[in-house]
Image: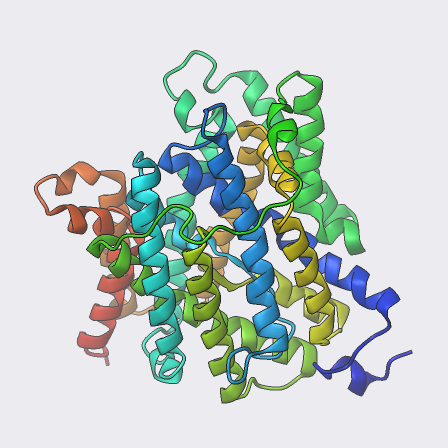
Length: 441
């Protein structure tokens, strides 16, 4: 039996019989959230779901698993000053999706090359942020961070509804929004809620993935699942450098760098949450800086091989507090599991058989939770006239430009891509107003 001091020690190595299951538990908590961005971005670029280039989506799913594992290993094991050496799980963040979708929209491989250039540039910029992260934190009080997280959720909710109703390519077709489509999505939502609130332990922590499994079984019974891609997928693949090529355009580079600031702040919060919840102490400057460096390095490497940006996963912070196990070696075992999965295309092919409606049910829950987290952060704000005006103007312009992208039809292409994300203009306006508007007596 481990002592209280050992449980709070990141360097403690528990018995393998405990470490491996706990590591897998960490992966179950983040697995769906990690691969979903790849499916959404690939779909926005024009890949997958019944199309001849389904292999591109499968490859992206593989890279999201593989480089989430690699980035997690960088965090837990460390490379000199890079890595917090804490039980931090890395993965592909939802936060980047509102910016990535307009960058790749319908552009195929050429647009993906531009996105990869932006990811690499953003990763390098993210590494630089590690040197100044403490000063950036003061520019982002709960008013701004809450607004940003709320905007991320609001931007993604539309995608969840579209997927649940039949998918973006199905919009306008007779089957879009059919009762059969909604039935598959509803099963996922109901089972997820039941497991989350009426069970405990592993079942509760894996509620999201088990909800998807329940919806998948219903879809299978309805004849909505195709296994054709599994037979075509190989058993082993090595990540391919510059799989989509690489190019640099202003919209992608600026967008990914700006999102890197938001991601860095999220990581600081996660590191603080882990040290408080697992060890009852504040995070050190060395841990915060190392974690930010690891974010940037993991993102840069992923972009070179056709993966998506990596950041720390907040859901695993709660898991550390719940289990009371602070050991970084536990998460290392989970990371190795992700790496192995990322090398086996059969895994990505199985994931790609999930009907879009089933995935829609899952992301409705996940994206709604993102928005709810933003509201929760905003509850800490002292709401005076100043804060209300900053919030009102930022939300109105950001959400408005996202809902009516035609309002910028005469703007340069780079400006249109960045501004119609909704998230970036809202964040920029909020930060600017917070710096220039005087406090109200």
